[in-house]
Length: 174
Image (cartoon, rainbow, N blue to C red; front, side):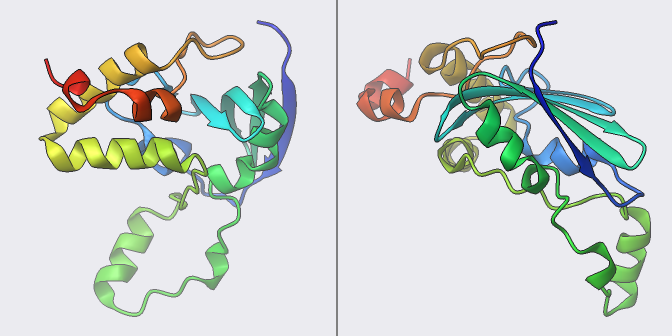
């Protein structure tokens, strides 16, 4: 594996990388993101260019390694992505239901994915059709309007916003 730039982020335990980043993945076949327990691979378009990020949960630390022209931007914002900016101690559940949920999901943080267009495209697809079809559409769009992500990992970049904008409406329907 070629060497990428690395950043270690202190994380308050308990921490659940899988459950924190799971909402950002578009199904098991998402070509832009892969989650395997304590390791996540994610391709993204950043303001500095494309990046592939490998995120590993070690004891008390989340190690992020990135490749591509957007690697430094991705590393700079990785703490937001993995929810390390959350103030866990400041959260106080106000009722029994929230106390119960908090006890069961204490390791989950709120990810801040700053690649907004990617999230918008996925949200639009998920509003138009049922879940399985939305995941399938995301996969097809990623292959048709994205390109291979930089570095190792074998991922694809999410759909290029410019290419999405240039595609006529009928191009999205067979």
